[in-house]
Amino acid sequence: MDTRITLEARRRARGAIRPVTLAALAVIVILAIASWFLVIQPHEELVLSDAGGHPSSPVTTNAVQAPPPVNVEAMGTDQLLAEARKAMNDQRYLAPAGNNAFEFYLKALEREPGNAVATDALRETFPFAASAAEQQINAGNFNEAQREIDLLAKADPANYTLTILRSKLDAQRKVADKAQQEAADQARQQQLAAQKAAEDKAAAAKAEQQTTETVAASKPPASAASTRPASAPASQTAQAAAPVRETSTPAVLIRSINPRYPTQAQRARTEGFVVLSFTVTAEGATSNIKVVEAQPRHVFDRAAIDAVDRWKFKPATRNGEPVDSTVTNRINFTLTGQ
Image (cartoon, rainbow, N blue to C red):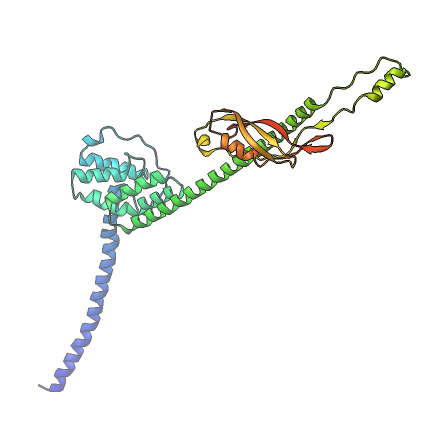
């Protein structure tokens, strides 16, 4: 046989095989695509349908608040799976507590470890349940978010999503605590400012009243009008011979310092007063401060003495000259407005 004829035949055979191979590969690809759409995908949808949900289902935190079934502990695996499917249909992935899909599936796994339906449902639904837990964090429902995260951890403790959720929950809690503390501090400062303003006003009014009373008490009585005729020589002689009357004015408080409320008494909600007697010097300072009366004893004494020690007066005068004088004052300690 001619060698050339043999080689030519072989080349023709190889050229015929190539189109057949390509056609076979095309058929295999078409069959693979068809099997995906006709077999694998319907199977996954069937499994997820048994679980009661689908990945395309929207996640919402407004789960239907259905009443929990009675006597869950007595339910069998099939009953638990049926309750889980109802919860999934209502999008009750993690809430409410005791009546949600994850708890029913976990209980089913306790009854029948390795149950394929429960295992697949928990795995497929985990991302959507995690999204629901994140929405609880964003809404500020921190206790509920913590419960849902703990429930997710029972289903898949090694899932990295749990680390992200826990970090976010911790950060949001710190932000909320800081905002709450700042609001409380601001309210406290406003309260203290209002209280101090009220105390200053009351102290000023009291000081003014005490000054008025002291001036009125020390003012000499008006001399009685003479009934004798103005032209009586004896009367004129007596008036001319009468000694000049001594004039005096009392000390006047010009600057007061509110006493510091003792911390221990403030915490114990204790109120009281201190009556002090002290000397106002000719320079207007206070000295020789003594406690005349106190109620309760030894609680507010030091605070009252320290305050009076810094008071300033316009000194008392006698015939126009400043002199030392003795003043008695009562200081009240009340918790009004605290």
